[in-house]
Image (cartoon, rainbow, N blue to C red; front, side):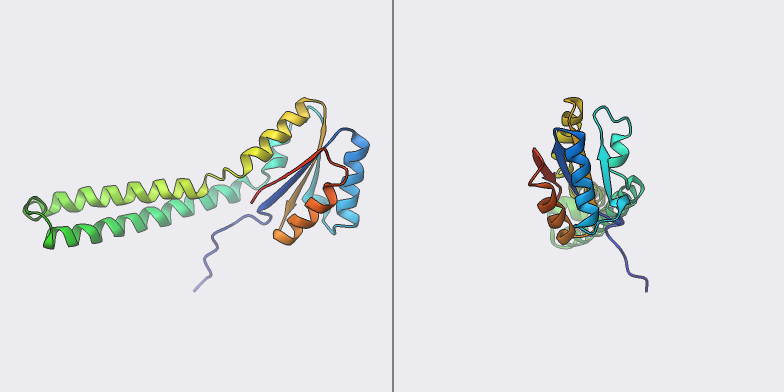
Length: 176
């Protein structure tokens, strides 16, 4: 059976460094490529007023959408099954009103199961860890500062990017 991948992003970790000048940002970009062993497509330079900022901050929107759909499908189905199991138990040994209306009990508990499964999927995929990075980067470019964005493949790469950006950056923000 084919392995089921739950994270479709190639580079799920993002690090952003904010810089005062273009020279500092370009030096950091070169440092990441030369010393940090990052590929040029993993490192993005954002200039003040950049019009393609969203594409650079979240370049894998299709993968994120696929992941979002997958989690909603899986947890919605799990909620449905959970609701049906609870309905089976309740109609067998539960209160009289559930035993006298088993179809209604199954319908209601199945719907609640799907609803709670979908809510859980939304909470799981909302990605609140990206908000500070996106907001601070956008604010910095509005304030005529430069940003260097690194899309890291794993935690080690993320930590390496953070270490290389930290000495010269005003601030460094990263995602989980």
